[in-house]
Image 1: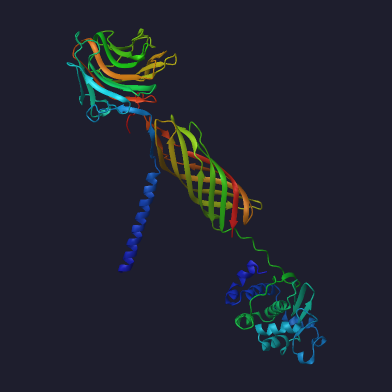
Image 2: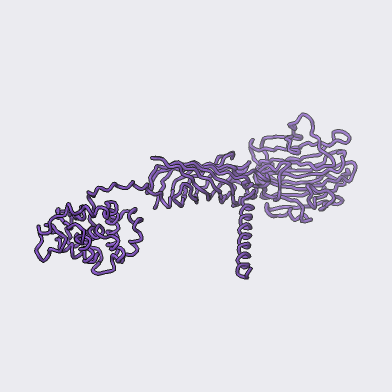
Length: 269
Length: 359
């Protein structure tokens, strides 16, 4: 075989290979591509940076993470949701001297939308007897005359019986709100669960507060909420008379979204 | 005058010509002459030969072109004829040993003229009465009847005084009085290129909110056979749709490559198409907090059925229906929903438009 013929054969083989490669590329492009068309998640905190940087003034105007001694808040890898690297760990003393409002908190407020879905995942490593109260999620709004920033709704852990944990919702204006389920919902212990709320801020009856536990609705309340558009959302661990103490709560994958996140929702691609 | 079939049959001779007008006329006449059995009938021509002495002086006794024609005059025809076929050959053919004493007769009929050669008669319309031109045409007809092979082998246009064509339109053949049977008409050839342009409506099946894309389609079929390759492209307006709970503004640019098989009939051509379908698909979320535009590629198969009025060339209306099947269409992804679903597996379309056949 002379060199010219060999060169031609090699050239043909290369052309064939290039054609097959191009066709394969085209087939690959044309097969089940993912088109990421955007997101309704306005903000999310997954703690994957190993810090609380997501709880800052960006994007809503104010964000904060804090704890009052002896209570602590830290980023931990002891318990994480869906295989993520980090979660927030809140440890509160829960003694009777841990007076009201003192605990660990993650706060977002300022330019929150007048209506949105607020979601967070919680992990309770053991059941805790709640002697007085244990707040784990809080909404604040502008109330009173003249309107001032005030507490509105608290989502609390309760311990209806030994080893059982449940929830109650407290309206700072009127006391406990009746849940829409006949029995107090069971809060799972030693496993992650999702608490998601829909909050619409309105000074008339169009205001709304809806709560889901692991995707199941447990409260749907309508009525006036805030008097201005100011809204604050806190993911907290604030309690009194908790046994055993200190009480530990892990928190992960917090989000504020225009559409419902739900137990299967994603916060990142 | 130069009919396509004549041109094809005598194409070899045409290529030998230097002057196009002569070639065109010669080709046509040659074809007509061929149909008239010119050579075979030569022996019969003596019976119909007019007397040379009827209109010719003694010095022109050897000139075998006769007649009272004023336009063209017989001499002019002869002068033209001897430039095409050598004089000796003409004489030998018409009046040589063993040949009948034949002549070429020319008659002026006003807007027409008639030429009779060896029992072959042809009339031409030439209303402008360009006599020189008539003489050339008559001479060519005579030359082709008398000795076509000599004419061709000698190089029809190699000798002067071939000249460019005159201004008037060429004479139209009115009637062939020869007895030759007309050849069967050749079937009209299919267009080499067929361009189709039409508005179209395409919609993807299975979406919660059905997207109706209006637009235009351009399709090109190449070739004359019953099965020809096909290339098509469409430009479609964007339309609203939804995938899962994600509402989208969708834009699509489909391309297709395939083959078309046509089943012709007397007034409707039915055709079917099969091939590959490609499309650029662009999706933009309509009401997500953070909306992005994403473009993907669709790849699949395409089938189509259509019908077209049977016109071999020119414009003809057509209608077609098509379906594209995509085995693995793109997935739409949005937060927090995640994978919202897939874009349609099946696209249906309809076209009503014009098809332009070009030979």
